[in-house]
Amino acid sequence: MAEPRPRRLSAPYEGVRAYCLVVGMWVRSTMAYRTSFVMMALGNFVVTALDFAAILIMFSHIDTLGGFTLAEVAFLYGTTSTSFGLADLVLGNMDRLGRRVRDGTLDTLLVRPAPVLAQVAADRFALRRLGRISQGALLLVWSLVRLDIAWTPVKVLLVPVMLVSGALIFGAVFVAGAAFQFRANDASEVQNAFTYGGTTMLQYPPTVFATDLVRGVTFVIPLAFVNWLPALRILGRENPLGLPGWVDFASPAVALACCALAGLAWRSGLRGYRSTGS
Amino acid sequence: MRLYAAVAVSGFRRYATYRAATAAGVFTNTVFGFIVAYTFKALWSERPHLGGYDQAQALTFVWVSQSLLAVGALMGGGFQEEFQERVRSGDIAVDLYRPADLQLWWLASDLGRAAFQLLGRGVVPLAVGALAFELALPASPLTWLAFLLSVFLGTVVGFGVRYLAGLCAFWLLDGTGVNVLCGLLGVFLTGMLLPLNVFPGALGEIARALPWSAMLQVPVDVVLGRHHGAGLVRALGFQAAWAAVLLLAGRAVQAVAARKVVVQGG
Image (cartoon, rainbow over all chains, first blue to last red; front, side, top):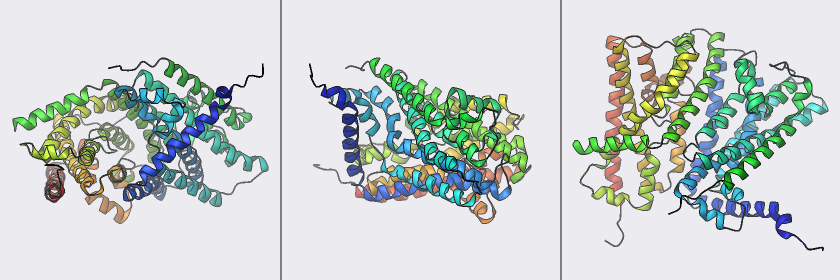
């Protein structure tokens, strides 16, 4: 009766292993064109840095934006960029799924003895995205040095919790977006609105946006839990929607719920997949 | 000439085929429009008349730039990935053999693409923006006509830059790095992130003189009616001059690149 069930038990391990193998392959292949890789990594760093340069230029004309100082905006920017960068590095190429569905190459992944999600996530893994993470992390450190925060143990702990939860929430958006592409394979750009659009929005204080928009990213697509809610607590700011205080600590729970929903969406997407055939 | 017209038409129809992709792009541009519009609104209420724009003009800048993002392929997505892939795979040798000019062929196809993107991806975001915010759009049809001409010239300038980037593939083989740099300049130096007249001091002067300003800043200033009479001619002349310089540079680099092509087994 003690029949071992290796397949079930080792499924997560197998997925991670397959992911690492495919990632290793793509890293080696990237390194074949070294000049191009250096340009890409630098470019990735500078792209995100220029994003912030625009904010710096804004602040050369003003002292506060929506009542927030430069250091406070840099804190928001650094937290969301780091979270998004992590998710983007690990899962950022999921938007290629639509192309695979369209040209039928997804079938190749289905017959391989490894989880499809791991294979799709690792497809064309782009090491250059380290550029975005390092830029976000640098700004986060800079803002922490500049800010005058009354640190408590809870606030200190909230920073790493926020970064990890944020990465998970963005990761869930990537997976949900990929699941959507099973149905609408050309429409991969829709998810850019929530991923890139989301991180752009979270770089700015919530006071800048219309209340309905803030409600939307709190209750419908819970991006506000990436950094706004916990960050406002750390900065000692009022919650723009007047939500109860415990909401600021809800990010990990929200992140897990998002991941579960994204996993379900992925399953149903993959089940409903019909090959283009030939 | 008829050949290139046919190429342009097929470029238009090729992009028109992917309706879901177009709808997705419109959605994304509109979402970004809202996000950027609110940040600009906050900025301009803090500093009215920043860069010589009032708030309505600044918001118009946001929505027109979202509408022109795909037209100028400012963040990539034009022909250059395909061009680089043909260089990498060697298919470019076939293109060079064709009884058509390589540069004009791709220019025609890119203009066809741009014409579709202007209709398919430009109209809806601008209309949504005009409904949601108070914009400073012109009433005179002549201004709109000048805007279309300016968009056309801007697209040719954009093509000139992207063609040079595509030609880099003859030396680098993998074009991804160049494309990242291209997208970066296309976002920052065009004014996509922040209008160029808000850029401080020398940085602003330089940015406004570079070809990237011809892709977005000039067309938006034309539609805002900031150029009149001789000023309008100067603005369009600025675009035309960059277009000519870049197309000629493209031809020169192409001549050098074509000499590098070795067809195996011929």
